[in-house]
Amino acid sequence: MSYAKAHLSAFPTQSLRGYPTQPLRGYPTQPLRGLGALSPQQQQAQMLLGPLMGQVQKGLDDLVSTAKAKSREISDDFKNNWFTFVRAAVSFINSKEDADEAADQWASNIVGYAENVRITLTRTDASGKPFFVRKPELAQRLLRTAKDDLNGLIKDFGDEVKSNAFKAIVSDILESLIAFLLQIAQLVVVAFGGAIAQFPIGGIAVTAVVAAAVWYKFLR
Image (tube, rainbow, N blue to C red; front, side):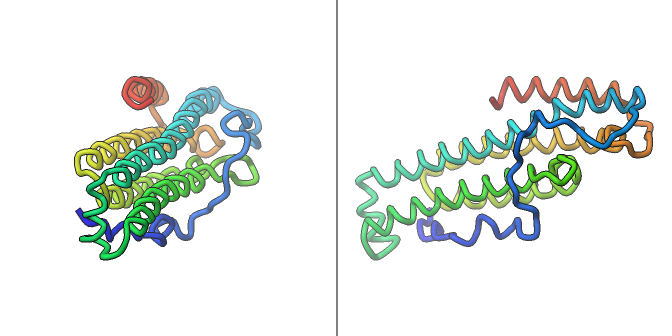
């Protein structure tokens, strides 16, 4: 266990550079605009897309709230443990205040990274569509990077058992978000007036329902 690694102030935003970072407002109730006359297939795609968008927003909110709660729990446990006095002397060759500051910085880095992920994915354009709907494939890649980065941050501090549990929760949330985005990627071409591809809309509906059921059962 290396407490010196807690000094990672530049880390949370490093992997997200170049991505848009404007928070979403009014989501997910904002209507979809500019679609014109809709075919029955487009109408069906839109009906499926709305709930999936809502699940992505809930997942991103849960990512942030989990990051706040779990990082603070591990940080406080470290600071309130009397062994910290000994650990501080060994790991930081300084004071307990420095060790406590490092614990707070570690927690701040994790929360900041999670918040940057949420801001990036939910930024809207002039039409009101969030980034994860405009570019679902890119959003999936960003989430996979976030999974690796957050797991790397988490393991650098605190009790190994609690850190592993924290990583497992974060990984489950991000994997569920990626699954929702896979469905969104198949629907956006139809829902936003693109070429009418031969998407199995009914199959997507079933998959979306199953994914939502898993989400509500295990991750809420």
